[in-house]
Length: 281
Figure 1 (cartoon, rainbow, N blue to C red):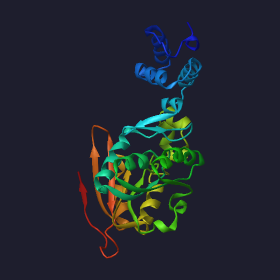
Figure 2 (spheres, rainbow, N blue to C red):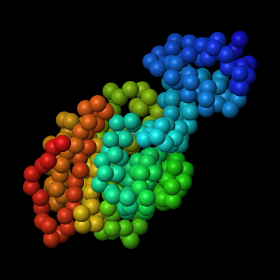
Figure 3 (cartoon, helix red, strand yellow):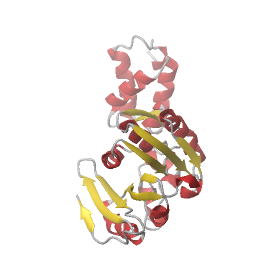
Figure 4 (spheres, helix red, strand yellow):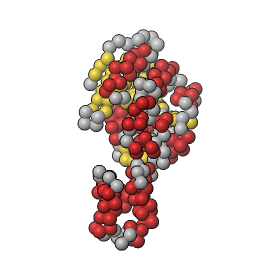
């Protein structure tokens, strides 16, 4: 029996098995889990067949489904848009711990807007703004961010933001691209082929965009505000140096189980001067 002939409301074990088998043959490591997600997302038998075909063809599962699970939310993810990584949930958790129950939040390089939307779900009151340079990402983010009352802007980093945010931002999330240019070609095909290069390529050492973000951050952060970004372990020293050059106090937090490393820069205000020393958690 072909997948397209299956009644979507009465999938039998054999029907499900046919989907699993197709995914497994294509090399999907978690074929059983992916099959369940496809079968629970598709609305018609034809959609099941189409989704399996696209997944077998190498499209990321999240682009096939049209959504990704992130911190308990179902976040819309359109084709070509950066898929939020589960390890980045750690960054959002750190931001939530710093925010109290309300905050002015900016999500730079927002991609789908997953970080800002997830943080807004954790807070009682939030003024949320998100920005990305990629038009496809901005269209996708508007579906996620406006749903929680936020605003999304298209443009290059801070240039996209309204000037009224200067000096008011309590939490600045910047999930910047940090893969060195020469290593982009080494990424898994799902990222390398199906996600925008602008969301991956961080320049020669992977920190070009980050340096621009840190340099201008003090002009946007409120006194006591925080900049949070993810980086790799080997880039930590250089990333912290960029934060400190901007006059922010830096500390590094990590979670080995999630393979996540996050740098937090705190703006103490112009009267606070430049901070020295780095805390590691």
